[in-house]
Amino acid sequence: MTIYDRVDSNKRRSAILIGLFLVIMIALGWLFSVAYNSPAILYIAVAISVFQAFFSYYSGDRVALSISGADQIKKNDNPELWNTVENISITAGLPMPKVYMINDPAPNAFATGRDPNHASVAVTTGLLKHLNKTELQGVIAHEMSHVGNYDIRLMTIVVVLVGVIALLSDFFIRSRIFGFGDRRENNSGQGIMLLVAVVASILAPIAATLIQLAISRKREFLADSSGALITRYPEGLASALEKISAYKRPMEHASNATAHLYISTPLGEKKSSYLSKIFSTHPPIEERIKALRS
Figure 1 (cartoon, rainbow, N blue to C red):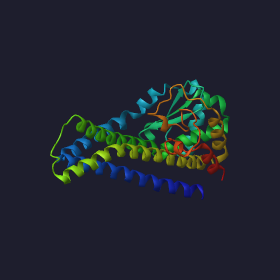
Figure 2 (figure 1 turned 60 degrees about the horizontal axis):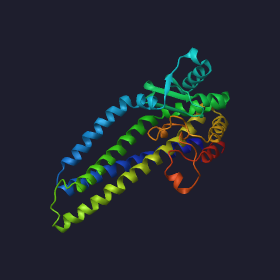
Figure 3 (figure 1 turned 120 degrees about the vertical axis):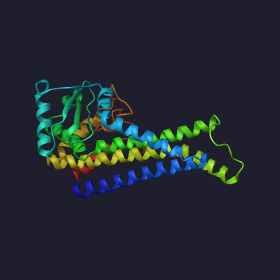
Figure 4 (figure 1 turned 135 degrees about the horizontal axis):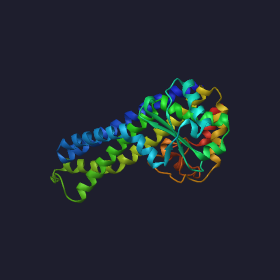
């Protein structure tokens, strides 16, 4: 499989996963509406999702940067990093993003923003310490690929959908515990529908989270491929990923809320197993390196 084939494959799979998200959310809203005999539940869910979407769209990047302890820098603060970002931006045909620095010994980086005209790239001090020039170029190209591929906007949509599904499920479970809503359960059909809704409210958030993680992993492969196309030197990013993975300790400002944004998990490497792969925000670095070198 060529890099171009991998890019096309990841785009198709991500579109399919987004479709699954929408199916889960609509099905869940419909189940709860039928169980309570009230379509208002679905309308409320839509209203909440719209509000969350607007907030995440316009303020999500500032929240992510604040959580990560990132400080904006200018060219004079670190000319080498600034020039690297600027050169990669020109090569990729993208606007120059804002550049941020995170004072953390762990080598890592992430990109955020709603589109290429409102993007930011943040790197840790540890990344600059451990990587050479070509490796740094590979990492920046990876992050600029996230910007150019609109991955950040995609992940914002995904996070909003996960939140809506979780809110719907939590609302339904709490309402059953505290006895709110339609209590007409003497009808066998109504009772069955309520049972189905309860089971769905438990399983839906789990399924939504797994889909979110799957999308995040696919976008990492896509950014690796796109980054290699920008630099025309896959070995630079492959070597950078080796050095990043060799650092096992978590970042000082590591957060589950922003973990999917980073080039490598900021929570520290865990033992490789089938379950850890399923519940990871990133694909195994060994697989990413193998793909780049093949």
